[in-house]
Image (cartoon, rainbow, N blue to C red; front, top):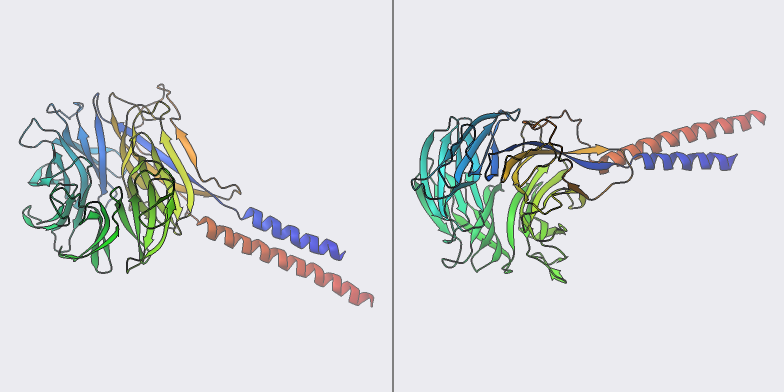
Length: 464
């Protein structure tokens, strides 16, 4: 009988541990394509306080209320919180023979926003009202062809503006549109110095990118009024650049393009890697805590968002053909990876992603070259909006990757015009959930075993 009781206890423990395993999956809800018969792209988005948002990019089409000027025009689309188009319009510079694109947008308040881009490599920032009217336009530097922009709103209402320019500097732009000053971050006109993203951290502003000597992968400490205080150089590898930065608890999370690796490569943080992208955590003194290989080849445009217990990463392959959506835990362990692609290698590009402040879904904008699932194609390249969120289920076999090829080319279904909004249960950390479930079942099994053993002992005593 004693063997029976011990067997019963071990069985209960096994059941508890097995049932506590969790699987994390990624659900991506695609909104409709946006565009006409020619090429249309979204490069960036930002949120208004009520859950509506603005997406910017470029268009070469004429459709609906959009009339093309002959070349690419800067495109602005404002969506309500239910993903319906509220307002759509274009912007062209004074020289109508140039091509205009908006690469970055920053909401100022619920009535205005700032969009920055270029008109055939001349940098521009335009302040718009939400009705489409222009408040002011400012030419700001010269832009190279890699299209990296960042906008940061200072506490005094001014802006830090950085574009991928040949002058290697960032700008302090007054709220009224005048350039207050600029700060050089490179050693000569073609040094490649650039800041790709800003974030507030420890009472200062952190900028990331490249600086000083050609190709240095660097981090910049900037005051709240825009002065450059210090530069931390991680590497002089000319193929590396920090794409994005976020605050992860009390540290900084960096995403890095590390260049294509053939074999026996070391990333900018001294770790062996076999691909061309990495995540890294650095502490408040900018010491490296940990880094992790993304496991992607030819990666570009890495964007990170932190949602609850997850780091959400969007990235493209270097040739702009495949896009990736990945979830990591806060220790940089890969939880799930989805690859979005066409079998014929048509373009599929994720350009920017930001968190919806209302439901914490990550919204992604980009463009595709053909139909994908419920998204129809009106010709050429179409822009799109996608909403992604993690779903946790209690399943034992967790998968770390999947490939999402075009799921359907069924043109008989209706053209979807909205991103699906789903009611979600609170997301449970798979590790925490598994641990709690395990403790619960172990405790229950232990109590049950003790009760049975006590009953058996009492029976023995009674017989005595």
